Length: 181
Image (cartoon, rainbow, N blue to C red; front, side, top):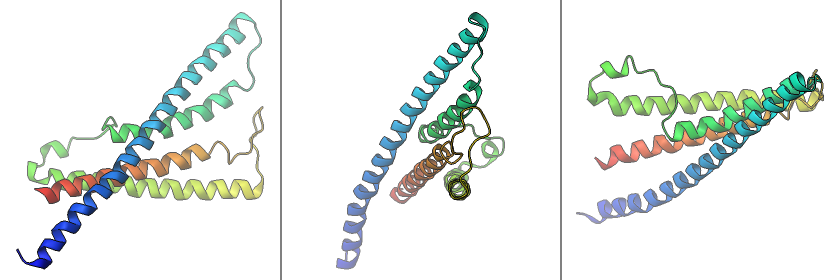
């Protein structure tokens, strides 16, 4: 091998651990968001049980319960979506992909992660615009707890960023796997 080819191979070997270190960081962040999502689901369960007891046993229904449950549900879904993507536990439509020849499988995988990255960018951008508008305008929810409307939107923004990071990580891992072959 010539010196130029050897240097390129050495640079690729050095870059791989750095990218995989970033990938491990994203995976850890994703796992933590999955744990947070699980805790939020348990909190939702406790709050629903509390609301049921209040309504049917004590005959004093919670006026704020549904509003808080809605906010918590959005947060649980957004924090859990990145972990679902990392574990490949997400919903996928495979009607067309199962009919394609196996040689197209890597391209379909790349396309799917790229589509998720694009979706997460659009979701993060539109959520950020909504957050900044609500913050600048000073709007509050119309419900019983009267919370600034930008606060419950933050988990949606963070979840969109995390979904994008996981998709980029998986995209890079797929490309690195294709380069190894």
